[in-house]
Image 1 (cartoon, one colour):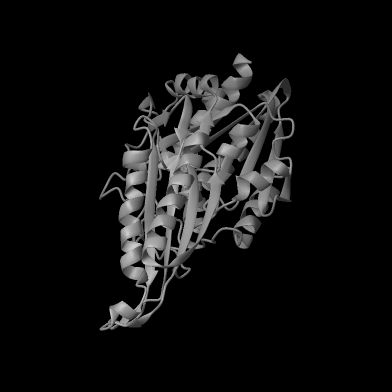
Image 2 (cartoon, rainbow, N blue to C red; image 1 turned 120 degrees about the vertical axis):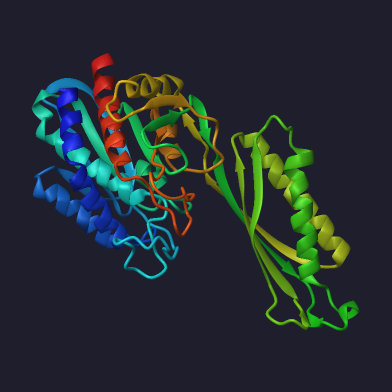
Length: 391
């Protein structure tokens, strides 16, 4: 039966492509994915696949009952887009100004929909049950996963798996990692309060631009000098805004950034060190500050046995060239909430474009090799079916 499903998924590549391209042309940002929700629900209605909507917000959960006894496996795909103006120039480019699927979630949704349809058509020959989780708002904090888990999307589920189409390595390569795979993703906003004034009379001001520059430089010492070098840490200031005229010293400045860690104690140490640096430099400059730190998605910690299950299963999947253990990645993912609730594993499906450069995720020119969706669907199918076979 697994081989039959693999073959049918390959035959339905055009359907995956059509779904993906439609969603790509009509992207919606996190928490505003209303038309996308209708599209997914209409797909399930067309094939009489039972589902529930409004799970934890815009989430959708379809359930497929196999004809043979077995366990319940959940598979997840996200469907929100990003506030980015697309610059790919493809024929199916986003029709929505300043919004695009610059991370591949349109491909995730197309993959899961066609897989759900295929599993449903063969449900009488399948063991166990299959839960298809279509998640909203992956790109933001607190994100859709947390709300969907709290709303019961994993009730009765024994294991959960998900994949991300990944443009940074060759199409058809499956990568995952036992235990810690992706970092916890936090964010912060620092507002500096000084005294503005004439650019020719700096002695009468408290200059938040020079202060902010010192803080940006000093914060780099947190990871390089305050944290044990064996503990991965990323501290990035990604935004610095102050002033709007060449001859005026800015009386306020705003800095935004992110912190990525795998360890809770390391995260708390980073926060303490950041606050100490900010407080000290502000006191020296006679400025005040407001520091807002948001603890975001937890790190993605795969179950070791489930990750090994993915690696062993993927080796036999058509269109998969290799299954590899990857290095830990500092990118964040709210799939962590599912893994905190149930055993499971997350994995990357290589989708590097065959022609042209491989732009990183969240880049205006991001795109991926669409045939990688077949490898993703076949691997998800095998992982779910074999989980029941080996259970």
